[in-house]
Length: 185
Image (cartoon, rainbow, N blue to C red; front, side, top):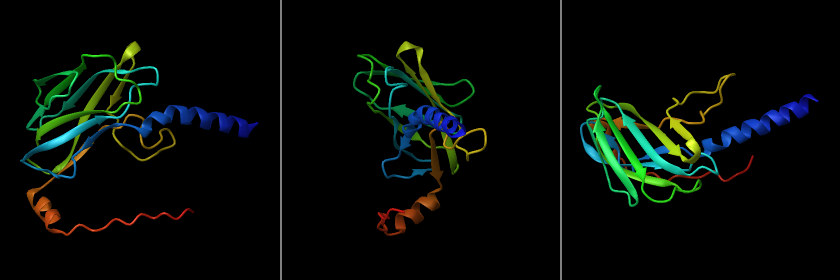
């Protein structure tokens, strides 16, 4: 009987955890985010809210250390950007066409004036879908505990901004090949 209960709990946990396989993520396209400089990044929202709920709108919020953001054009989406009274920025993308199906990733290019100091910086992302469903991609990544699994269901996208010295050292190093371990255990 206990085994059946554990199996049922695992099945329910698996159902709730399955959206965690996809996230709102930041992709730097192979170029380091260097403190005090400007470069491109892409915000990727990998899926709709639930299989029956398609994406209608995406909002991104960055704090005061981010010096500026300028979103690129995304066909079929209206983009607005506003400076927040407490500092930082709010970017909103509103879909002008039919809702984006659940399994379709959406890519939002952004030119970013990175913070002046090296560090890890977060971007809170809210995704609104049909039927009032939404995701708030803002949970800090943390190790698993007895009360919460790791990673969280809606992890906050973050970017590591490096110093100019770190960036020049990394660029001076020759690229090393990556060896994949293909053995099964």
